[in-house]
Amino acid sequence: MFILYFGGQKSGKSKLAEQKTRELSKNTKPYYIATYDNSYGDSEMETRIDKHQNQRENSFETIEESTDLTRAIKNNNTYLIDCISMWILNNIQKDEDVLLQQLDDISKCKANIVFVLNDVSSGIIPFEKETRKFVDLTGIVGQKLTSICDEVYEVKFGLEKRLK
Image (cartoon, rainbow, N blue to C red; front, side, top):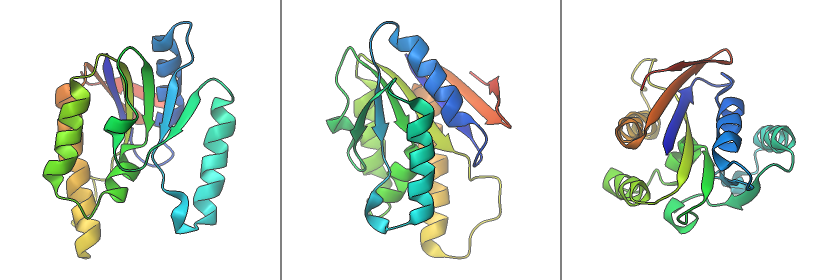
């Protein structure tokens, strides 16, 4: 089963995705694929990561993979990928076909995967080229994810709304 949770910043999507992942994993410990590349030296992001780690306690086995998700996913396991937005950012210099191919490859896996994606598509078109590319890729990847996912949830203020 593939499931997507998407929403704005601090919408509660990660918490809901964690709950769903634990439900899917039944009696086994699921894997948490952490996509943030901590080489930027951003102390605020480090604080956010610490909060996420404390929130999930020891209920997940963590795998750090910032660029190639196919390396981390094996059949017959349950995964939470948090978050696809950071994965896009880490791969921003690559062609969109490379990212879509990774998602195609993942879609063939026999695993439970819960994806988390930030919704950044409700604003204006950014002036800066790289930011515009990130927003565009987020929309393209989001469309791809909704096509391969069995369930899709929009999250606002900690409330989920099933769209698919």
